[in-house]
Each structure stands twice: as C-alpha cells, then as structure tokens.
Length: 289
Image 1 (tube, rainbow, N blue to C red):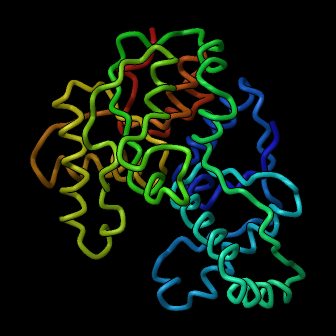
Image 2 (cartoon, rainbow, N blue to C red; image 1 turned 45 degrees about the vertical axis):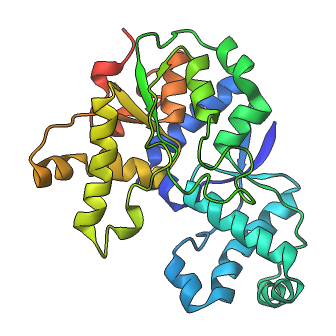
Image 3 (cartoon, rainbow, N blue to C red; image 1 turned 90 degrees about the horizontal axis):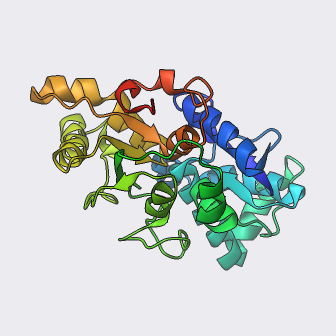
C-alpha cells in the first residue's frame, strides 16, 4: 500500500520518535510511505488564516498539488496537519472562486491543483486499510496487563465532514487497535477533550491546568500510560509534564506514548527502533519484559 507521505514540521523536529516508530511499524505492516518531494509547512497556524486566508490556503494547496502529481492519497501523522490540509481541500473543492485564486498563486511556482487528492491520517490507514486482524496477526509480545488511556485529542475528530473515519465524540479506532495488541483500554471520558495547546502562548496557566486534568484523570482511572496519535498533544502531555508537576505541586509520572510506539512494542520491536529514549517521561516501567 503506497501513500504520499506528508510528515509535517513536528515529525522532523519535536516528534522525531513518532516518525521513527511509524517507519518501523509501517515496514512490518507493508505500508509504503513515500515522502512528498519538497513539501513545506501546511500553514496550520490559525493566525496566518485570520491575517491572510488566501496565503494560508495556498500553503496547504501547494502540498496538495505536489501530492496530486504523485497520484496517491496524502497521509500525515500530525492531527493539526490533517485538519489543515483536509479543511483546505474541502474549501477548494466547494468554492470555485477560491480555487481559481489559489491556482493563480500556485501558477507562479509551476503548480496547479485540480482537487484529486484525499487527505488521511495515519490512524485512518491503520484501522481501515490495514485493519485490526492484520495488526493482531503481527503481534509477538501481547501487551497483557497494560492499562491504556486512549487520548485522541480534539483536532483529529473535530468535524465530521473532515474526520469521517471515526466518531467525533466517541471515537473507537485507537481503542480497537489497542485491544488487538493485547492492551486493556481504560474507560477515559477525556479522550477528545482539548489539551490546551492553542493557549500555551497566550494563557499558559490555563493551558497547563487543562493538560494537568487530562493526566490526573488518566492516572486516577488506573491507566499505566496515555497513548495518542497527535504530536502537539504528546508534547503537552509528555514534555510539559514535569513543569505541570512543579506548577501544581503534584506527582504524576505517567508515560505518554504514540500509538505507533505501543504497536511497535507489541510487534516485538526494540525501544531504540521506536525512539522511546526520546520520550521525556521514561516509559521503562511499562515496557514488556
């Protein structure tokens, strides 16, 4: 199965372990992610859209046009990239005037977008193209006894017109995958609540409290870890966890794994292959023995 892969900025910077674990898991499952040549930022910052909508959509459309030339679905690991590219794609397909404006911009760099690309999240590929049966067939080390809080975040399921592969309020795709690899899902009511990422610059304490609540709720429910498919959510829950402990004078110490990392563990892949040493909160206490 071949896809035009849009890594997004985070997978080459703050979320390198996500990219590493995705590559390792994809090899096992026969997923061929072909990185889009000369891809650029998707334009996910909403401030850009508020200031100059045409510029913002053009940033996304450039990547869509590059993927269209590859004649493949575009797949991304980042929930923010998924939302931004999907939103731009829908706008271009529904608004002929906007599409004309954007193509006049793209023409200056020798590109044109006809609307022939489907934007997908890697989680969608896992659950719908690969399926839980094939995932379970590749399990070498069932994660029995591991209690997981599946955290989707708000972006990946925000609008049903865009994120149609799962339910926007009660998503289950990740739950099914976790069950297929032997883990136990914790009934986690916070699974689609915002982690506060968009407030970290303007209202840091409010954002930190939002993230803290997600962590504390998961721990109080008996979770050994939180698993997420979103780089920004992972950053807030993992990299900021020590700051949250200090700010609120609490002890959390809850490992945060990417969905690809936990699948990789079940596949018998090594911590090094999955980039687990890059996680800020050590996952060593939950690794299979």
